[in-house]
Length: 261
Image (cartoon, rainbow, N blue to C red; front, side, top):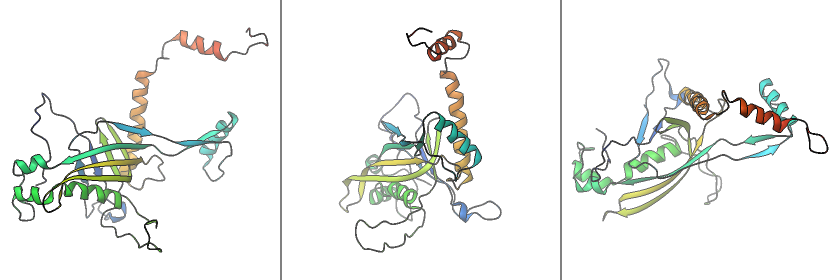
């Protein structure tokens, strides 16, 4: 039975919907019957992030990429006619996760024994190491042993294959991979086991279908695009607004040298 770090000291009039990270099975390990040796690994946030930062970067280019398909080339030609196009990197979501096992330890644990250890003793002996271990599996890739770098120094680059995952934030689901983690372990038991940790996470969205390997990832991104289209229609003020169309027409209408239409 999985343990729960759900805080009980703070009583709220309603149950909070917490964020989730769901690690997807490796498509390469899929059997002919569609099953996997390992299932979906799910990490529920103990506390929802106070802030979520979403960023996108790119650069302005005018040249066309001849290696893309015909539809993409047509879009690039249209953009070039406007003076150029943005070659954008996929979106990155940054947030901070906090895990604290102090309350779990004080109440003696709330699960059955783990690996034959009493629940209270397990909570004390493991602290927040299980949550950190699951995050590390997402970032490194499950059961992956990276090849040793050619040069043994701290700047050597190791090639990793992070686990494709789904980031659930309320009604939104973002498919992607963890590209950066900064773990700060703060409080410890006498055996130097961390019982509190703050983790800064950078999660890169897998937007292009060619990048995503998992069918779950592709489906999640398609549903995200469809969801954005529906929500954008709610915010769109142009529908049925003839005066807005008139204003746009006047703004783009040709003008004479003296400034009059």
